[in-house]
Image (cartoon, rainbow, N blue to C red; front, side):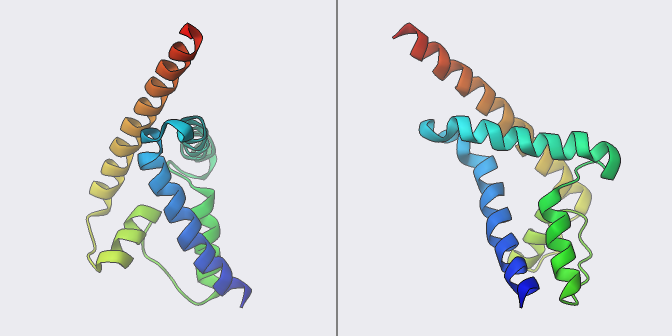
Length: 126
């Protein structure tokens, strides 16, 4: 029962977190939080990734552990690939998914930094 709860929790939480990372920069009141979530993601992927493998995500790791306890043995190495497979039923090329994930992450991160700096400059001028 606990693992089923965790499975559902991670489906919802991780998906919302991912969507927020993609579009959170577009909402002025959410930009600071967005930058924070992007930094957490970057830390996980690039710093923890030194020890656990490039692109390591603690949420994915914990979700996979819950799913394995339920008897699922997912073949995806990334949450985005897994999510696309579950939502569409299509098994997209994992390398393509990883590359697109990185490109979208970098664009969202750069937008977040730029907009946060711009907002900060505007506040200083007032």
